[in-house]
Length: 168
Image 1 (cartoon, helix red, strand yellow):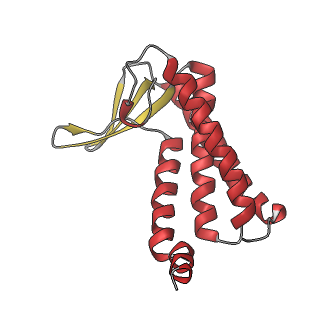
Image 2: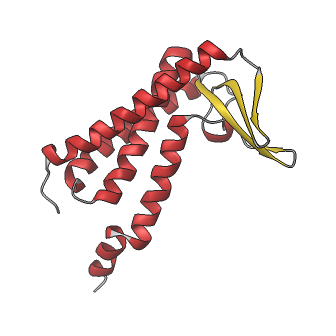
Image 3: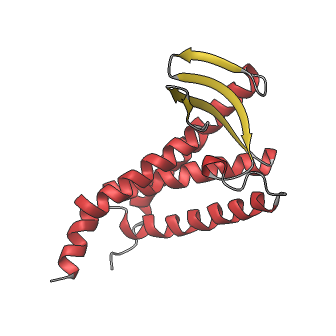
């Protein structure tokens, strides 16, 4: 098992903090610029909207009576705590650490919304041929990119090499 390296992990914590700041700034701009339910057509495939998502990705559990707010808050905080530990253990693995930092920054950005507003502020809406993708935000984008990078790392990066070495 790798030796914990708090100093090397610090840069990944800073990246997570940058994601949180960018997410919160973008949401403040949206709150100041768009009314709830308003749609601003930005491009033929892209709208700016203001929605409040009480659920998870794709509004999963959004119609529940409120318990999901605290469930997803506790879940995100728990995952973020695990990521802090993982970043200390694997700070030298750049792709994995990048993925983890993006996921943690996005998760905590959305936690701030859940605590402040009881829901996550979403504002980017993509659409094509009459199909509308659910609205999302900077934090959601960071989580998605982080998840894709984590899977990539497991199949093609250090995670794949570690798995290959373990099976020999």
